[in-house]
Structures are given as structure tokens and as C-alpha cells.
Length: 114
Length: 115
Picture 1 (tube, one colour):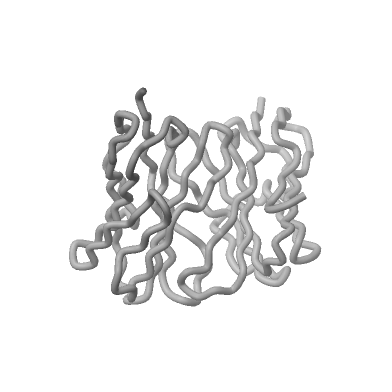
Picture 2 (cartoon, each protein chain N blue to C red):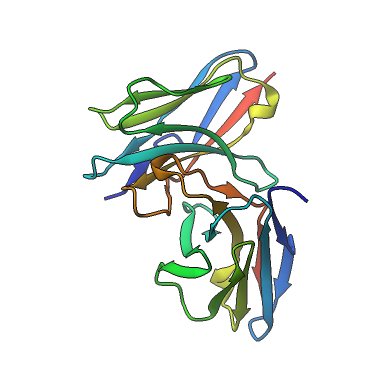
């Protein structure tokens, strides 16, 4: 595997379910990110992890719970979601590089909450 | 105020023609980086090109170039010799300052290349 991978690619869940999204990066980067992309809205940053430590939480509701066990893996645990949480969830990674530090994205998980 | 503004929701271009996608930004930080990403229908965001606020020359990467006008706070993407595979959403993004690692994205422009 190369780059940034995400599983599952598609997920349908009910509002009472608990599910997890997984992201893995094979680039040796030290930072990982979760973004949410809703229809007709710009990408919204959710969380930033730097060397496994959460450095940004963009006022995300507690029904989204991130976990970063190491610099290569990032999870997003989901519980009691709402239909408006249906979106494309994108994971990205990057390596220290100053202003030009480039984020590389995974293919995303398309989530539908019923 | 929006940090990144992309005023063209959709654009059409003929194959082999050049096209310019507009992006304006708003920041008071003298240090910032500007990025363009391409998102095909498959969903993955693909990095295209980067321009730093202190860079003296416009960035170029193959058929992509960035028309950076600092005083006007614009960073337009120019795609030369458009190909059918260029049809996608294009997003402009900015990193403000050297400490913050997150990117702020614009709303995107959907480009359709016509044969």
C-alpha cells in the first residue's frame, strides 16, 4: 500500500449505531488530519494530530471521537450521529515542511446516516 | 469574512485550450502558503501546486501554473492545454503562519473540459 488509505470507502449507519473510520498513511509523516466535506460546503477541518498528540479540535461535536495510536494510524469513532453528519470524511497526512508543507489525502469515506 | 474565495462555481473549457480558475484570499499574516488541489469524482484530493508568500516567482508544475498577485491577494490557477481528464473540482487552500498546520479551503470550482 502506498500513500494514504481509508476504510471503509462507503458506510451507511443508523443514528443509534457505533462505527469507526480508519486512516493509515504509508508516507512516514508526523501529522494527520480529519476533514469533513458536506455537499455545497468547503472542506471543514475537524481534528489535527501532531506526533500522536491532538493539536486542533475545530469545535467538533462529541459524537465524533478521534484516536491516534501512532503517527501512521488515525481513527474516527462515530456514535449517535445525525442525518446532517452525512458527508465525505477525508483523512490527510503531512510532514514538517514550513509554509510549503503539503497535505496528502486519502480517498475518503462516504458516510450516510439514516 | 471568508479566508478563501472562489467565485466561479463552474467553468467550461474546450480541450487543448487554457483555462484560469480564480482564487482570492484574506489574511493579515505576512507568512502564508497557497495550495491548489484537484478532486475527481472519485473523491480523493490531489495536490497540484504550491506558492509561498515570499516566493518571488510564480510557481509552475507541468501544465499547471499559479498566477500570484500578492498586492491583489489573488492566486489564480492556470491550466494549459486542457485534457478531458482535467474535468474535476478544483480547490484553493491557504495555510496561515508557520505554526498552524491546518489548511483553509475555498468552496471550489467545477471544471468541465469539452471535446
